[in-house]
Length: 150
Image (cartoon, rainbow, N blue to C red):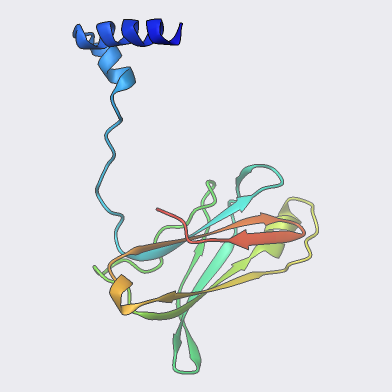
C-alpha cells in the first residue's frame, strides 16, 4: 500500500499539480538574519502562554561595575524588543538580565518562590553581529533558560 501511495503521489506531483508541489516541496525558509541585539522572552509554563507585563532590566558589566543598558516590559506574547540593537553590533562582554517575576505572579493572584530571575550571558568578540534571544520558562517554583533563536 505504501508503494502504491508513493507512486500515486509521484504521478500527481510530476503531472504538474500546483497543489501537490505546494504540499510536497520544502517550504522556503527566510534566510534574513535577525538584527544584532539582545532580547528577552518569558514563558509561563503553568498556563502555557507568554508572560506579559514582566519588567526586565539589561545591564552590562564594565570592569567590576554593572551599568544599566535598558529596561523593558514584556509584551502580551512574553517577548521584548531588542534591548541592544540600534547599531549593527552588540558590544562584546558580559550582560545581566533581571526578570522581575514576583509582580507578574502577584497580578495573577499567585505566590512565587522566586521574586526575580537573574541570567548572565557572555557575548564573544566573534558574536557581536548576532542576535541573542534569552528566554526563560517559568513556573511559581522553578525556571529554566537557554539561548533561543529570534
